[in-house]
Image (cartoon, each protein chain N blue to C red):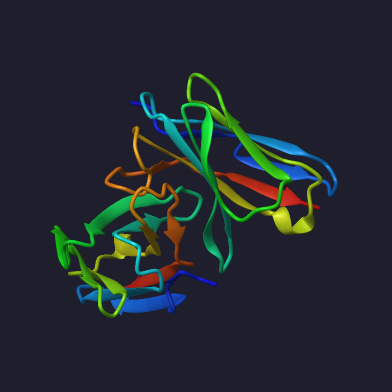
Length: 112
Length: 116
């Protein structure tokens, strides 16, 4: 039973346009969410996070939106750049539980 | 400062053998977590260690074990290897406190294990 789901295995976006990556979760106890980016042959790197007390967090070109009632979060990248091509993972945790639950990842391809 | 270091980077083992992977966290980080990444499965949590104690464990069989030393370095061991154990094994370190809380995790480059 996947508690964190990224239903799109891949996404192709034109350079300069907006990339929207989606993530759904089932566990209502999750209260902290993170997005990581992974290039081939490298470990994931932290991008942005959001606590359940917020519904939006921005960092430069990256914005994460959280809809608690829908148990859905999304990562917006504006404008998309070629260097954004990577696999994006969302992850969630619940309170003092030290375990991060990860989605399967979405491969983002930015077309020139 | 140096990042998370995992050794070896690549490993080929035969079914039935055992393997030990090593992870050196960022200096000062006391929490080390291990993950398995396979195509289409994302990152599966194996276990997390903090101050030499296993704090949390994922849903993997007992063939997968780990430990952490007093210098926070961690090792992961897989015994009686199976073909399905072929994967990228990632280690992540973070400062004291919950890995999934407000503490960012830093990942190593991983060890690519191939079981033949």
